[in-house]
Image 1 (tube, rainbow, N blue to C red):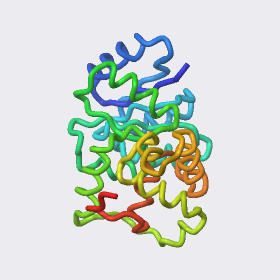
Image 2: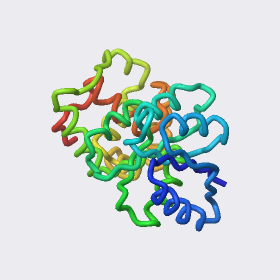
Image 3: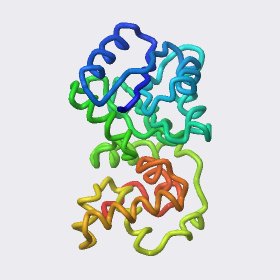
Image 4: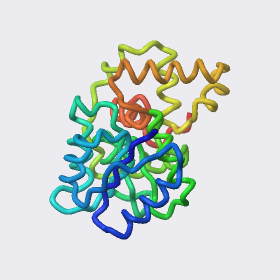
Length: 223
């Protein structure tokens, strides 16, 4: 059973999300938060697996709440799925930088919501290839590209892992990577998982950010 915490300052939205989530036999809502601070507190007390996090909330916003959750070693297994009004919201990349596992537009269908929760709960990032490319191209070329990382942090990777990391950052799925490199999909997934472990990345979304911040991949690259 995947335990879900809903964090949104609008009661009507929380009620709607609860109804959709509780319609699925493998999902359960374990709490609702109306502020960012309450989201952090409830994450610790409910032991939720996935937090549906709105960005704009009172007290502290969803970005600050996400950062507090992902920085807490006791909450290492918690995944944050950002809810946003616009798919290319200006805050999305910032959310990924502070540890979110992906994002979902508030216009998503119920099935997309349920599958999104399952996706991030499994450790995968909810970032489509198109969204990945668009986000990175838009925001890493903006006036605030975020902190850069020394390229030597990638020295822990094998040549194949670096190659796979670059393809992840370009938005390719494990299946796409397998076809590009003539590998079995399971082998491609193993390389992705090893790269995450070596780089201390929580999930695939963090790998995308690391690849760009180290300069392994640059905005405009197409592979």
